[in-house]
Image (cartoon, rainbow, N blue to C red; front, side):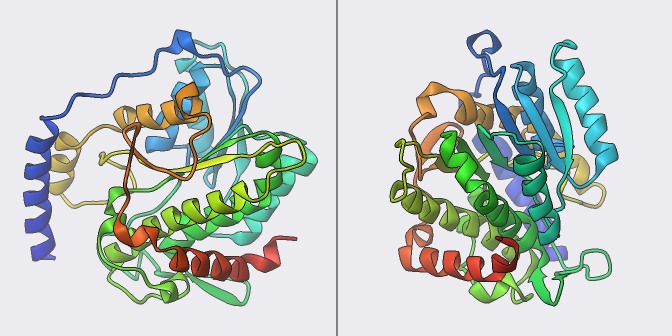
Length: 327
């Protein structure tokens, strides 16, 4: 714990000075875009980064699905987004989605497609959890689904979104949707363990990093499959992995005074939402797919993330893990 605190403080100081060398990203020009008639699903949109993304997209008139576990927080966020749109956008809707429950994900997809009969124009896989150290009393590293067990961070950050995307894929393809997987630059920290999908086999923060690497593997491999399976009209979705920037996230729980330092130095969620929204709506990114994007710039992800064999193995293993929920 002591070593972590020292490393955290040093990293924070270095980050503070390095970020001062870069030109800030401007907010979107709201008068350039009109998303009326577009349907956008944002997971984890009840707080933090997801809520800030929802505010910007909501101001443009989109029909937003707040795909969240906590209905109370989601409805509070909806009120904020409605006010941010100057009271003009009433197409703001909560739908229950618990990424730690594969059954909940399947039911969400069923309600969205078969009951409400909605199309999806933009899917932003944003929700996630991050644990910096082990605390099995409050942060159970293993989550049970039926008779199976899963690594909790992998389930929330990667596998739940993997299943959601698979269940919506036909809808996404038909509507030439943009799929954004919100990853992180920390995907480059450490290696990758396939076993960690279902077990607790690595240090807690390393598991988070691996879950973000899994998102990138999934992005690259699914892009390959999408390019091989255009529908009869030639329509296809696009999919990219986004590093939003290192910001003061609500999913990070730090003791005092580290929490004060953390929120003082790092970017705000609002700032980091700007790049995500631009990738979701700007014509510049309309046909871009299978890329890793940092602050609206296409860059290389880690060398390990380009291992196509691991990407294929992860895809097949993930399909096997969720197969009972795909029908």
